[in-house]
Image (cartoon, rainbow, N blue to C red; front, side, top):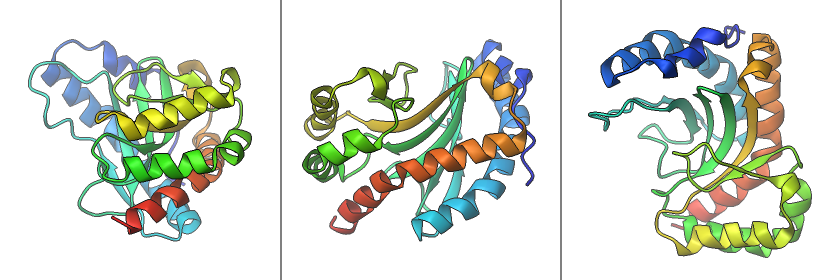
Length: 213
């Protein structure tokens, strides 16, 4: 295992003002840790998905003024990118780390994925742990906690994915900064693996949809 864990300075990167200084810190401080995570997580994801999983570190290339408020590494079954594909993410905000499965706005499967999840809503509602969270916008830190939602609320969120052009759907764990800092690299990897295992049914449904595009 190459990943040694996150520390306070990784989160303090997002206190740096200005696009170029913050990007330099992301590249020098956080991205090397993402490369370590790629070494540890990619073989695991390839094994549990039965796909060739490729890591993609966010470059934030479209930004010209505002510095990124978070950064991430994504894992997808594509060498050409991840945004159009169902994928997994590990990312850092100033206050927390997220460990997600994601179908975001650029994906062509949003409607079919939404429909299939609605067909399985009972099983999905029972399967997702109460301490997991849902997001409808990967650019914002706000989430909906599974334990606070009823089945109708979950269904409405999934239906939104299929009916609104910019809608997204992400599910997984939100880990507070202090909790993450207290974890060793090995403990963090294990937490990611446990989370991703629980999210595999979502990935399998999404891949079935993608095969039909």
